[in-house]
Image 1 (cartoon, rainbow, N blue to C red):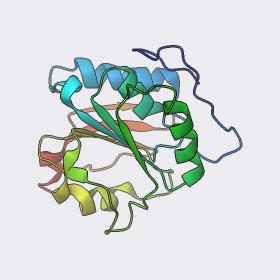
Image 2: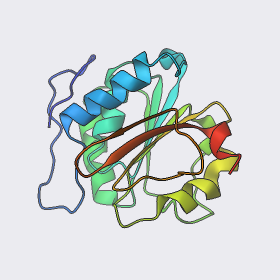
Image 3: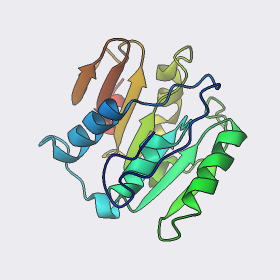
Image 4: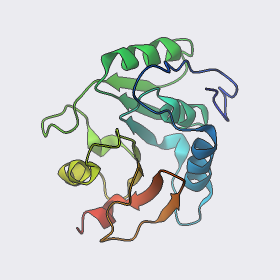
Length: 183
């Protein structure tokens, strides 16, 4: 899997094909960042923004965020082997600002500092019910934060997403945290 754009463009991220996670395809990663960085309804300063790649798997989304100029990225995955693999890759680029954790975010007592993120990307295994997890964290997330979800079904249908796109077997949604706080 290759990084699409930015300072790390063309670098290869190793992916273990035997694992059960499904790395986000290049065209979907490109769509996500085009929406995030070019949609007129979504405005923020990426050079001063912190990104979180939650359920990060291969880390491709967070690495892409760093490559495209985000100030900091936090990678979290319950699989410590994946966190180590991401760490080994990122150590080759000492100018990148990142942090890593292997928290179980379904636990209310996770150690993640949710209020520090401007963009949070949630891409859990499809069998995980994401809505209750996000709602459990939502009061800790800053109002203007952008929450992006990748799921196998539509979520938060009680509120309108800022942007959504459907693919053959997945849905990408962009929400503002302040809208989800109303639920």
